Length: 159
Image 1 (cartoon, helix red, strand yellow):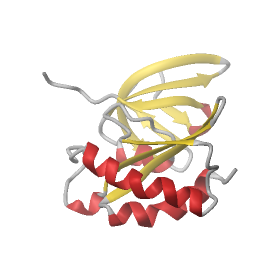
Image 2 (cartoon, rainbow, N blue to C red):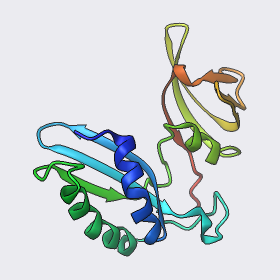
Image 3 (cartoon, rainbow, N blue to C red):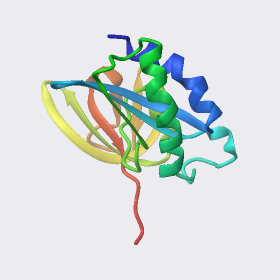
Image 4 (spheres, rainbow, N blue to C red):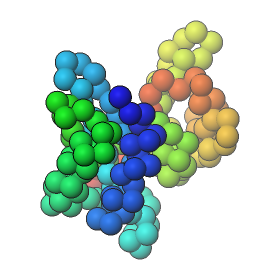
Protein backbone atom coordinates (compact mmCIF):
# COMPACT_ATOMS: atom_id res chain seq x y z
CA UNK A 1 0.00 0.00 0.00
CA UNK A 2 1.18 3.54 -0.74
CA UNK A 3 2.70 5.61 2.06
CA UNK A 4 0.58 8.36 3.64
CA UNK A 5 3.17 11.01 2.71
CA UNK A 6 3.05 9.98 -0.94
CA UNK A 7 -0.74 10.16 -1.01
CA UNK A 8 -0.71 13.58 0.65
CA UNK A 9 1.84 14.88 -1.87
CA UNK A 10 -0.24 13.56 -4.78
CA UNK A 11 -3.62 14.87 -3.61
CA UNK A 12 -2.61 18.23 -2.09
CA UNK A 13 -2.64 20.11 -5.44
CA UNK A 14 -6.06 18.67 -6.26
CA UNK A 15 -7.40 19.74 -2.86
CA UNK A 16 -5.99 23.22 -3.48
CA UNK A 17 -8.00 23.51 -6.69
CA UNK A 18 -11.11 23.05 -4.53
CA UNK A 19 -9.97 25.70 -2.03
CA UNK A 20 -9.04 22.97 0.45
CA UNK A 21 -5.88 21.86 2.23
CA UNK A 22 -5.14 18.31 3.37
CA UNK A 23 -4.96 18.45 7.18
CA UNK A 24 -4.23 14.79 7.85
CA UNK A 25 -4.47 11.31 6.38
CA UNK A 26 -5.02 8.08 8.27
CA UNK A 27 -4.97 4.43 7.24
CA UNK A 28 -7.16 1.98 9.12
CA UNK A 29 -6.73 -1.69 8.31
CA UNK A 30 -9.53 -3.54 10.02
CA UNK A 31 -11.01 -5.82 7.39
CA UNK A 32 -11.22 -3.79 4.18
CA UNK A 33 -8.57 -1.07 3.96
CA UNK A 34 -9.87 2.36 4.92
CA UNK A 35 -8.28 5.68 4.02
CA UNK A 36 -9.46 8.74 5.93
CA UNK A 37 -8.63 12.11 4.41
CA UNK A 38 -9.22 15.17 6.58
CA UNK A 39 -9.48 18.49 4.74
CA UNK A 40 -9.95 22.09 5.79
CA UNK A 41 -10.29 25.40 4.00
CA UNK A 42 -7.02 26.70 2.58
CA UNK A 43 -5.46 29.21 4.97
CA UNK A 44 -4.96 31.47 1.94
CA UNK A 45 -8.71 32.24 1.85
CA UNK A 46 -8.10 35.25 4.10
CA UNK A 47 -9.57 33.73 7.24
CA UNK A 48 -7.39 34.03 10.33
CA UNK A 49 -6.80 31.11 12.64
CA UNK A 50 -8.48 30.00 14.89
CA UNK A 51 -11.63 31.65 13.59
CA UNK A 52 -11.15 30.08 10.17
CA UNK A 53 -14.48 29.02 8.69
CA UNK A 54 -15.10 25.30 8.53
CA UNK A 55 -15.29 23.33 5.34
CA UNK A 56 -18.83 22.66 4.10
CA UNK A 57 -20.39 19.29 3.30
CA UNK A 58 -20.76 20.45 -0.30
CA UNK A 59 -17.04 21.21 -0.56
CA UNK A 60 -16.16 17.83 0.95
CA UNK A 61 -18.55 16.05 -1.42
CA UNK A 62 -17.19 17.82 -4.51
CA UNK A 63 -13.61 16.95 -3.54
CA UNK A 64 -14.47 13.32 -2.66
CA UNK A 65 -16.09 12.80 -6.07
CA UNK A 66 -12.78 13.49 -7.82
CA UNK A 67 -10.46 12.12 -5.13
CA UNK A 68 -11.76 8.57 -5.00
CA UNK A 69 -11.43 7.84 -8.75
CA UNK A 70 -8.03 9.60 -8.77
CA UNK A 71 -6.67 7.36 -5.98
CA UNK A 72 -7.82 4.25 -7.83
CA UNK A 73 -6.61 5.34 -11.29
CA UNK A 74 -3.19 6.34 -9.94
CA UNK A 75 -2.85 3.07 -8.03
CA UNK A 76 -2.49 4.94 -4.74
CA UNK A 77 -5.18 3.01 -2.89
CA UNK A 78 -6.77 -0.39 -3.63
CA UNK A 79 -10.07 -0.40 -5.50
CA UNK A 80 -11.66 -2.65 -2.84
CA UNK A 81 -10.73 -0.15 -0.10
CA UNK A 82 -13.00 2.52 1.32
CA UNK A 83 -12.22 6.23 1.34
CA UNK A 84 -13.73 8.72 3.79
CA UNK A 85 -13.29 12.46 3.35
CA UNK A 86 -14.23 14.78 6.21
CA UNK A 87 -13.28 17.83 8.21
CA UNK A 88 -10.83 17.31 11.07
CA UNK A 89 -13.52 18.84 13.30
CA UNK A 90 -13.24 21.39 16.06
CA UNK A 91 -11.61 18.89 18.42
CA UNK A 92 -9.04 17.97 15.78
CA UNK A 93 -6.17 15.64 16.47
CA UNK A 94 -2.74 17.16 16.68
CA UNK A 95 -0.19 14.72 15.28
CA UNK A 96 2.44 16.67 13.39
CA UNK A 97 4.55 19.67 14.33
CA UNK A 98 2.58 21.91 11.92
CA UNK A 99 -0.67 20.83 13.65
CA UNK A 100 0.74 21.98 17.00
CA UNK A 101 2.05 25.22 15.47
CA UNK A 102 -1.43 26.08 14.18
CA UNK A 103 -2.84 25.54 17.70
CA UNK A 104 -0.46 27.83 19.63
CA UNK A 105 -2.44 30.02 22.01
CA UNK A 106 -5.37 27.61 22.14
CA UNK A 107 -6.42 25.04 24.76
CA UNK A 108 -5.31 21.48 24.04
CA UNK A 109 -5.65 18.08 25.67
CA UNK A 110 -2.46 16.04 25.64
CA UNK A 111 -1.91 12.49 26.84
CA UNK A 112 1.74 11.65 27.36
CA UNK A 113 3.91 8.98 28.90
CA UNK A 114 6.53 10.60 31.11
CA UNK A 115 8.75 8.63 33.44
CA UNK A 116 6.72 5.49 32.70
CA UNK A 117 3.48 7.16 33.84
CA UNK A 118 0.61 7.99 31.48
CA UNK A 119 -0.84 11.44 32.17
CA UNK A 120 -3.46 13.62 30.50
CA UNK A 121 -3.43 17.39 30.84
CA UNK A 122 -5.63 20.16 29.48
CA UNK A 123 -3.77 23.43 29.10
CA UNK A 124 -3.06 26.32 26.78
CA UNK A 125 -0.42 25.52 24.16
CA UNK A 126 2.21 28.24 24.56
CA UNK A 127 4.94 27.29 22.10
CA UNK A 128 6.26 24.64 19.74
CA UNK A 129 9.93 23.84 19.15
CA UNK A 130 11.73 21.21 17.11
CA UNK A 131 11.85 19.05 20.25
CA UNK A 132 8.34 19.38 21.67
CA UNK A 133 5.62 21.63 23.07
CA UNK A 134 5.37 24.07 25.96
CA UNK A 135 2.11 24.12 27.91
CA UNK A 136 0.67 26.50 30.47
CA UNK A 137 0.73 23.71 33.05
CA UNK A 138 2.53 23.05 36.30
CA UNK A 139 2.08 19.29 35.87
CA UNK A 140 3.61 19.03 32.37
CA UNK A 141 5.13 22.36 31.31
CA UNK A 142 7.22 20.85 28.46
CA UNK A 143 6.60 17.66 26.54
CA UNK A 144 8.97 16.18 23.99
CA UNK A 145 7.16 14.98 20.87
CA UNK A 146 8.44 11.46 21.62
CA UNK A 147 6.44 11.39 24.91
CA UNK A 148 3.13 12.49 23.36
CA UNK A 149 0.70 9.61 22.88
CA UNK A 150 -2.33 11.63 21.79
CA UNK A 151 -3.22 15.30 21.50
CA UNK A 152 -6.24 17.25 20.35
CA UNK A 153 -7.52 20.79 20.21
CA UNK A 154 -9.96 21.71 23.00
CA UNK A 155 -12.03 24.45 21.41
CA UNK A 156 -14.54 26.11 23.69
CA UNK A 157 -18.03 25.86 22.23
CA UNK A 158 -20.51 28.57 23.14
CA UNK A 159 -24.16 27.61 22.90
